[in-house]
Length: 130
Image (tube, rainbow, N blue to C red; front, side, top):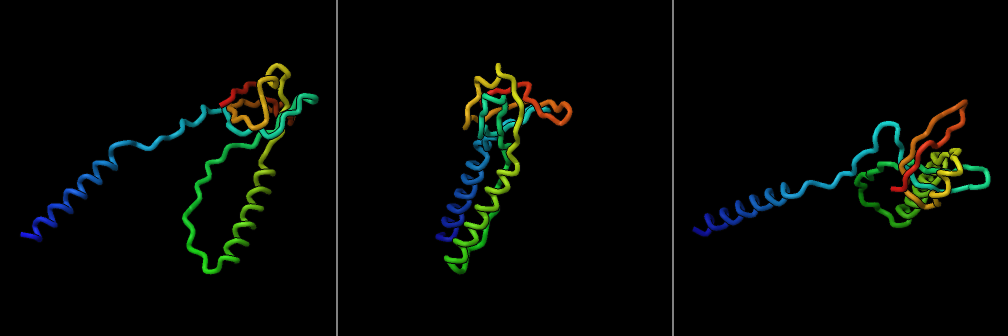
């Protein structure tokens, strides 16, 4: 009788877990339409009509194993952070932008923007704060 009660309890727990897991779907960001990019404005130069935008990345860090040595783990983390910062600097891009569009842009803004490439010069044609 005790075994049946334990079995019944575990079945109810399993069923309720499955029901909770199906209850709310995860929130997903809608990707921008084709031709529209997203990024973070890092520099706004109103004098020469340019902005520097760091593209938004979908970085999903994988699970990492436990480190055997705290000093080694700290050194590895610092090295990874330095490499990431160098990669981010390399990925940021400078764009020309019209004075009418640059007035609404500030460093630190998350933006969606469209770009045209004319003779190697990338120019923002539309920009909206996210």
